[in-house]
Image (cartoon, rainbow, N blue to C red; front, side, top):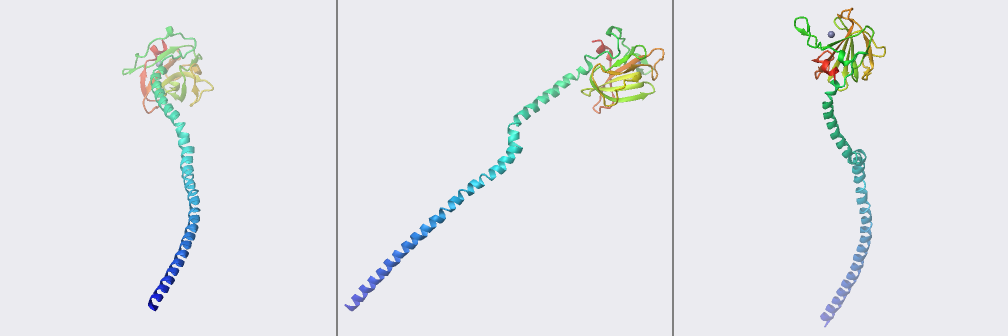
Amino acid sequence: MKWIMTFLVGALCGAGALAYFLDVTPSVLFRVPAAAPPLVMPPPPIAMPAPPAVAPTPAPVIVSPSVDILPAAVVAPAPPLLPEAAPPAQHAQQPERVVIKPTENLMIPVAGIKASQLMNTFDQARGSERRHEAIDILAPKGTKVFAVADGKVVKLFNSKAGGLTLYQFDVTEKFAYYYAHLDSYAASVTEGTHLYRGDLVGYVGSTGNANPAAPHLHFAIFELTSEKKWWKGTPINPYPLLRQ
Ligand SMILES: [Zn+2]
């Protein structure tokens, strides 16, 4: 019996200890979870702010720079810029059609001269191997000379043959207009001056190799090369162009 009693007492004590242990353990487990959740809860709030903080941060960094610098400026303007970029290409093609215009609607460059008074001397021989490749418009010395079209004065040059000369590029810079034998330049004309059609260029004279007894404007047009040098180009007959 003693042995049985001892076993029972031991069992009860063991159970009690186990119960106590279990009773304490749960409480510990509960406290731990209880403490853990709060700890876990705070992290979420932290995790929540963090994500927003991460999202806002990347967003502002990516969106604001991209929006301010590129997207915002590019997304909205982009369409305009592209469409505008496309039209310019069309405009660029139109100027090529306009390329013909620098040789159209030209003003007769000598005051008081009518189209019917012009003479086609483009193909006249000059020496044994040269052609005139220009038109001579006879007029009294001092008669006003006008720009045949809009464009910039690129060179004022005093040459042995041409005397006082002026080279003007048309606005497309594909053609040059050449005025020679001038008695003098208009006071306001210098290299770089932008002339409009009809602006005063200078005055008829006989400088260079022109006959002093027959002052005239020697006028030529030539198509520039890609180099756009005022002394290089292919002559075009001004006569039919001035007769238009
Ligand atoms: Zn001439």
